[in-house]
Amino acid sequence: MRTEHLLIIRFSAMGDVAMTVPVVSSLARQYPNIRITVLSKPFARAFFDGLAPNVSFMGADIKGEYRGVKGLNALYRRLSAKHFTAIADLHDTLRSKYLRMRFNLSRNNVEHVNKHKGGRRRLISQHNKRLVQQPTPFENYADVFRKLGYPVECRFADIFEHHSPDFSVLPSEFQRSKTDEKWIGIAPFAAHQGKIYPLERMERVVQLLCERMPTLKIFLFGGGKTEKAQLDQWAAKYPQCSNVTGRLDGLQQELLLIRQLDTMLTMDSANMHLASLVATPAVSIWGATHPFAGFMGWNQSADNAVQVDLPCRPCSIYGKKPCHRGDYACLNDIQPEAVVEKILQNL
Image (tube, rainbow, N blue to C red; front, side, top):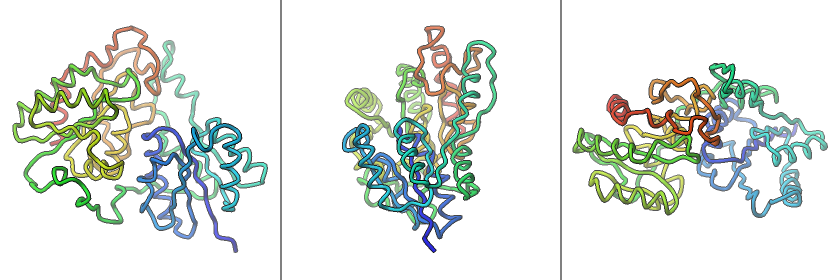
């Protein structure tokens, strides 16, 4: 009998790929006799290496080596040589649809994710808005596996639940030795303006935390030159702050640092999902988006979502759309003191 070999396709941004991990881990543990290959962008290897003995990772640069139809055909040939018995498309975009079509023509067992776009449209509608909790990606991914014949119950603690994290690979300043010292992370950026708490207000959060807890250590997370420059300014101004940007060797080390934090302040962004993967509580700020869209981090408490009630919220699923009001009141009306109180409650 041929060994069952499942291909899971999920490209997209870091946070989206991170949300597949709890479901893939649960699937692998509940079906140890099937082989699972995850196809994603190369950065995602850190999520899946060592996740389970029957899980392997395959990176594909879909904007480089496998760009366009010619590239996707080359990628399909590479994949078909592995003789997968089932294909789970957890992305459902043009590229994954093309690969899905090729596998369908070869009579593979193929299923794809239902994103429940109708419900999401009603959630963000300016008229006749329906503020109803939408199915989460975790539920949607599990439904794909159910349709393929692998019903799965999501049981996931963190990516280190089956092996101990090796903190010794981190620079010494990022290795926690004092158990009575409080460490928090702050990740103030996101991909779109509708998800970013105003930086002057975020600096006030930093200032208040430093005043309230003089022994607190704050680690600032960002990426790119502009974000690094901003965080460098805060680190210079507030001695309790350390800018992490560019000082860690890859995503694996970043996850190790986040694992040691007592809590992490994030936007509705990838950092919330990184914290979720290592079981670190996240206080998350929500502006144009809303937890009802389904993108709260795995096992994160809804009580830790900082947001204001406005009739226009949410106006966007991903935070891309410009503000209808023009003032981003959804973010500007959140007081720094409220954010600080929520963090202190977690500490």
